[in-house]
Image 1: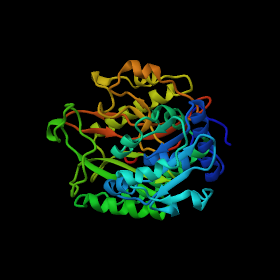
Image 2 (image 1 turned 90 degrees about the horizontal axis):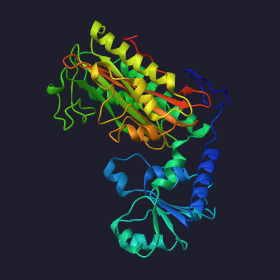
Image 3 (image 1 turned 60 degrees about the vertical axis):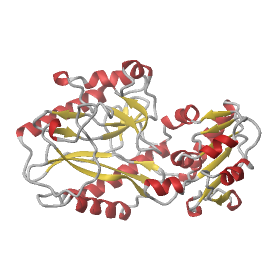
Length: 397
């Protein structure tokens, strides 16, 4: 393992990635948590939870198909072999015996739920999602929500998990080097999306997880989509848009690498160099990032980060319906969440620890002149932080 860094550093988090070790470590953590909470097993319907507990994956699909073809996992607390129900057995981990990989269950119907119940041992059950038939059939059983059990396990990443995130981000950033070359007046945003999706799979991505966003930003909030918060709206759904000279484009993409997410964000200008105002917006964004990085270390609170970010001109430098920072892992956005509408008291209660991963996403906005947004990913180390992202800011700086 490489030595931890107190400041920015790129390169691998570890010298190699051992996926079998990563799956074994996570399964052991889940079993330990089940035993500590007196549960008999975990029943997991959430796809990121199944991926975390077993290392299973399924084919990329749109949301409706993903919900319909979802995987289901049963993880016994005694450490015995888990069970996986899936429509894509090819995605089962290699160490799971074939007799523990079952056809997909339709848990939206009583018949599917009854087949699942036959595998459940006596005692309390940890469950992450109900379906109505499952709710009816589990009446009389003690059921505990999975969030409080899995959340603390997920929030601190092992070196293997950090390496998966770093590799996912590296694939994303490499693909963007090709996408950036296409940005010009008259080009359609869908051309950028096509290039991006082709390149990430050529580079080894497991799947795409965020529909590529190349959003032309209005100069003023009033010129953009209606917002209940009265603030800048981002992201908006994909539209068939061709770029015009001088437009400011906010970029947001994400992909999956062996179950772990990347999160890429940048601001681009179509045609020509950035204006003096746009360069100033980037400078102020970079200053926010630098101030936040100065306080990132074990023992710092989320409130320390929001205070460091400051409020230039009386405005918080992040979107109020998003965050100053969020975690990433098996979900694109997961704990820790920094600068949310839960308020300062929540931020004061959240303490950084080694192994936590943060995606910083401040925003500088000058109404009438649009603004600058980008994202950077870091992992908290024993003494500071290590950068997991490494992409340029050209032509801003």
